Length: 458
Ligand SMILES: Cc1cc2nc3c(=O)[nH]c(=O)nc-3n(C[C@H](O)[C@H](O)[C@H](O)COP(=O)(O)OP(=O)(O)OC[C@H]3O[C@@H](n4cnc5c(N)ncnc54)[C@H](O)[C@@H]3O)c2cc1C
Image 1 (cartoon, protein in one colour):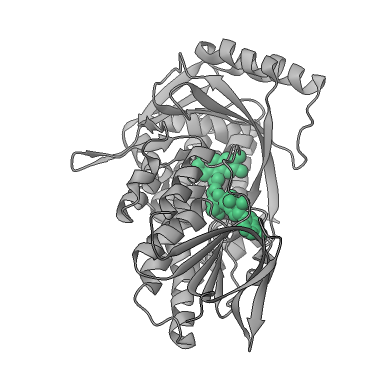
Image 2 (cartoon, rainbow, N blue to C red; image 1 turned 180 degrees about the horizontal axis):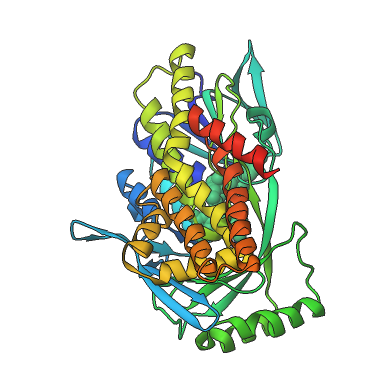
């Protein structure tokens, strides 16, 4: 094997690429990782790892990556609607308490990259991958510009895995999916003291759309304020006034003062929330993984868990196969793409369905009232949110239960206006859910049912 020929070449050392290199490298594969920017990132993405993601790190023996980074243990969620609030704990199983972690994305990524230095068969370089190289109908490697020498370098590999994140340069080649922006999150750092629920994620069902707050270090928590617009809000006096006069008064009073201080400091970061369905093209010698492959709304903090689940799946599919055999490798790639839907559909659907529910005043209220009933009404949905359960059937059961719960409420007094509202709730719920279900390779019967419902809704 020549020095520049690897078993696997990974583009990007973020959450997906960095952990993939570590797990594949530990399995004995010769791995090359090319990362554009090695410095500590200050992005406001990927800061709450759900318990399902923590479990995945354990499965891969990579749990040490979230140690020593001031990560905060997260044990559940607080949900706020108008003057009311409820608390829901993450699930337990046979005495085991599942927990998530809140941290700074940059600290987690630095920890992932530092770990790679200790794995002998992983080579990491800083460079910008500019092209997939093809020969005889398959991808045989990549070309990158080395950050330090400015040279163009060709790296050869049996399999190239593009983990180059949300703005992927390689999505177009390896997938049929289009990226759509659902909304924007404005991020602020707010002092950690006085959180209504210590060590919890906080979801505030505000008008017009939801806000999140969760601890990312022992000192601060991240507040994400949603703007339900496809165009990013511009930093301006008007924006500050909106945050102070429209959003802050709806926050729980314990954190309102700290939020106002953070608004005055003005250190805003704005990120788009995108939807990218998983629609891979089967190309020999290359796949997508992580945000380059599939994205969902960040509201439920599911992105890193999906990426880690896929890292675990692909590594176990390829670690013991002969990568020089095209047929074997291609069937592993096919299996990976199928397993992706099976493992992650519930996370994907939940994220965008819940966001849709939170934009609809009636469904939003029904959702809160439903969860407020406690017991199984809240306990099962949080097993899905935490990604400990991945059952689509559980998700569908609760999604429709919320809608029918709201309908029932309206039909207590069946005036024409209430009947109309009830009908609209069902219609809106289906309009939210149908396209999301279709994105996740439903079986033939479900697919036909979805198509019929879609036609009726039109
Ligand atoms: C506002 C927001 C909040 C979020 N919050 C959460 C959350 O709380 N919990 C959660 O689980 N998920 C969250 N997510 C999603 C999560 O951040 C992503 O799912 C996750 O980071 C995906 O990992 P990745 O490795 O695919 O991409 P990234 O982590 O973005 O890594 C991509 C890497 O590729 C590198 N790269 C890009 N192009 C090239 C190139 N040409 N050559 C070489 N390297 C390249 C980049 O520099 C980067 O290091 C959030 C997303 C957003 C937008």
